Length: 263
Image (cartoon, rainbow, N blue to C red; front, side):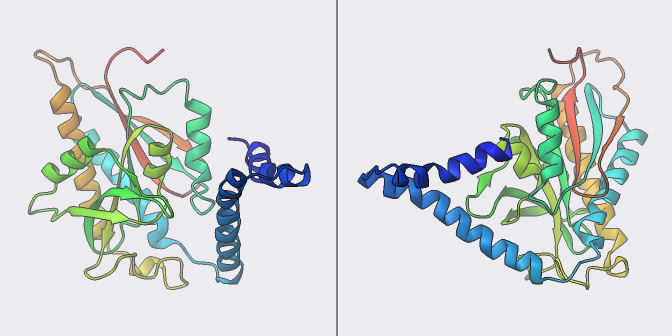
């Protein structure tokens, strides 16, 4: 939705009041944009008063995990499944980079065939896969991808489920009605990544083993998706495709069954 349309929707109740419309239902309509504006005011204040964060864990670690996932899948490609790499910028602007990609390619991506796996702050702790996410409203993520992550996250990966209150690339994909899952890492007893959005989020705090474990979890889940769709006598796997959009930011791998491109 374009910014001008969003602003018009927010101002609609005010215009109705100015036009002299008085109705009880208008109070409820006006409540929604009022809550949005109040929440936006707090968010803008937090952004203005917070120091810049280096962003090593959030989310340079996600870029590293996405690249490692592609390396793992290149060494042992899943059959019947094409894998594409997306490196999306704009992660700190409510995932505008992911939103821009989906808006630009919405006619090219078949929702019945495309899956998204995003990496969000995977530089410290044990790998986790998000069952849901979002700030004010929690959106459920894809149960099929969650089941694949559960199956792939055995003793070696020690992966488990989590409910992530942050906005992630997977949540943006879910809002556009795509099937998606977010993979993150957490240290015991912490709801958010340690040092999240602080000056302490520096490269030396990133644990390479955590990044590799998150990548192994994603690669294992993607291979399981390909195995589930592999017919008898399936041809060789499609080669992974590379695509970059913007600079460092949320990283996502999109998989779709091999075959003719969607109309």
